[in-house]
Amino acid sequence: MSENQTKTAETPINPVSISTDLSVLVAEDDPMFRRILKSWLENWGYRVTLAEDGEKAWNILQQETQPQMLILDWVMPGVDGAEICHRVRMRQKIPYQYVLLVRAKDESADVVAGLDAGADDYLTKPFDRYELRARLTVGRRILSLQDGLIRAREELRFQPPSTKPRMRDETARSF
Image 1 (cartoon, rainbow, N blue to C red):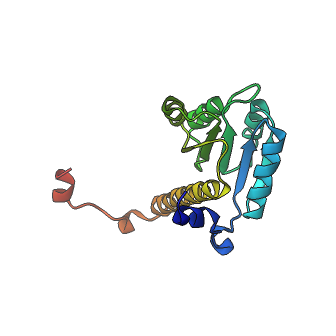
Image 2: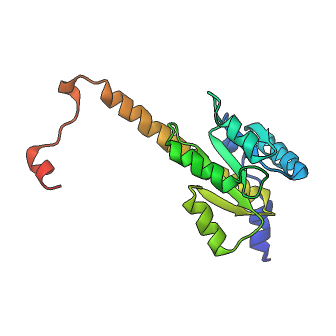
């Protein structure tokens, strides 16, 4: 590993830039890995909910208040992470839930299958905690953009018809 790569991996991200109030569901059947993830996430400012198997994770996702981010182990007892991901996407829930699928295998077919199931991202175990943090930062950015779109849509919905932006006839015909 080059000196530059080592510095990047060891350089902590400014804690102010990662502070968040987002909730994360960690569905992981390995108790040690579950505790490690919980510790990292809480240190980064996330509210963490844990599930030791797929059934418990799915039950958590049936509650009225649900986590915005999901870290799902692919291989778990009961319902696997890819199936949970598929179910989440079939609901087409608003607001959007960011899904990070984790698995010990890194074959390209696994990555493709995970993304096809609806995952937003995929990490291979074991992974570097800074890589996880960076990927969660991307997830927060996506959730923030989606939240902004929902708010803009709602603002437009409740505007009187005379104040809504209109396309000129010639612009509309060009589409």
